[in-house]
Image (cartoon, rainbow, N blue to C red; front, side, top):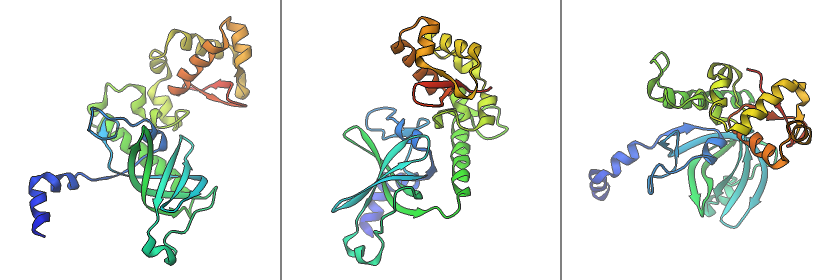
Length: 256
């Protein structure tokens, strides 16, 4: 006890006090980075400690010391490692979750050899699918609070974040429709390169409906190489301006 008190007086206690549990999407975790060397991984510029996420098990890889689950929440995919407790192995505490099962994960984001994964403290099955929607709303609220400030606060500290601050950057295709409309597509389009802006304007003129436009038709119609079209489409996808439809080479414009 004496050693613990001394450690706390040297700053260990305050670091523990800053340990928080944050709801996140997998895309946020995959795109997290270090603000500066040694700072630890951060989401929205704020260091992440404990995180909780919800997703679907895609694969299970049992090993001697841990079980690795590949989890997909629709925004991205990440490995979740649950370490095996040898003393509790016979108690069912290390029971595995079957593929396609929806689970909630509580753990800590870790990076090893440049690859991020979540070290899980606890994993449980989702019994009510409404919890998936609740989690996404919760993650969106926290993201908005940290990037734009409290509701009614006049924009808070995140006024300069741009369209991504409206929650779009948390999802592959822009996520919440209301957030997309309030963020304003034209503002994000100005952040794109010249080819991406031309591609977006061309797809709007084509008005191909829900099926969208294929890369080869776009390349022929715009007189651009397929490589340039693909690069422009990736940029628009990253900003939540378009989404894939029939396959990875067919896109449609999001309706703002």
